[in-house]
Length: 232
Image (tube, rainbow, N blue to C red; front, side, top):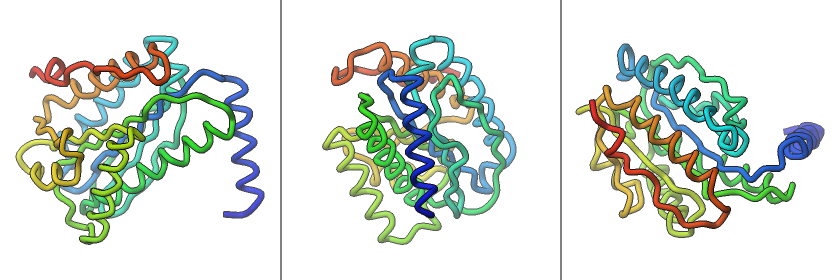
């Protein structure tokens, strides 16, 4: 990256945090856009993101404190939306094609979290424990064993050190729940979802972010039960 680009980015952060010095809760959505998500599944994800945006901006404090980033992954990993406050978040419209790189998405998402926390510290902004939420209907077919091992270690270290909370969900019967769970922290295995439950899990996430945003930084919280949002 050119040296002036780094300077520009730092200046943008300074302006952003001066305008809104509220504590932040960063949240990264890791969303599977592989070919198997084509059709009603990717539409359900798009609908869920739109409903999530409405929910997460309904509370004025959450709109200022929650930050959302979106990473789409198939055989490649792409940042669709870098961190913005919930009030500035505009839901993308995702389309599906290609293979699946779950480990690549996890590694990239966790690195984004660390970079964002460095920006907070540089600018004197307090922050809550970040959230990573991964949705997939597949298995890590385009990941090397080394990438899977790296992702597993990073997820478990992040959980153990309370650097982030990583939640993963496998959509319908195509999802390889055992493999996905093996990449997660032992106390937070992957959870199976039906397509019809996607809207509910986005509602759970928005309510969790609202609860976090209304707390004090450093508080230990019990988030809402996911099961309460998964009726269909």
